[in-house]
Image (cartoon, rainbow, N blue to C red; front, top):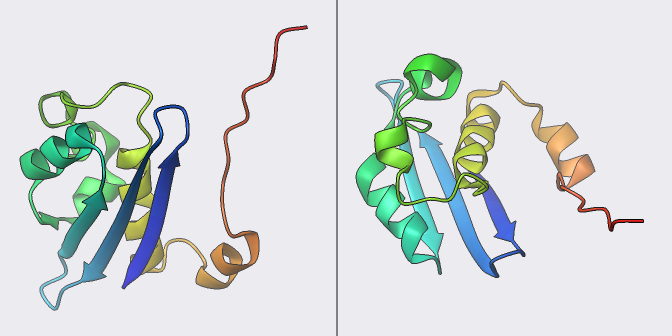
Amino acid sequence: MATVTVDMRFCERKSRITVTLREDGDLDLHIDTDCDSVRSYYSNLGGIITVDDVTDRENSRILDPGITEPLTMTCMTPLGIINAAWLELGMLSRSRADKVGENTMIFHPEK
């Protein structure tokens, strides 16, 4: 099981994403969120994703415009799902993830 939290400070919403590898090779997905748009997206996506969804950008249901429709283009939830899945699949190092703790996006003030 791999869990990541997407903290969208801009809109003051959080989503806790958990991905668990199934015996059949697919991944169970659970999102606990305080965002109605992410809840709609999660409903559109469903509770199961495939390895192709996290490795094939062109055919990924996670990034499909029809499925992501409730989200703003700036929402980081889809990337949170992909990162959690990559951790669960061993495509990202758990020890490195534990060491770095988080990735951030920094908004720089105009000068």
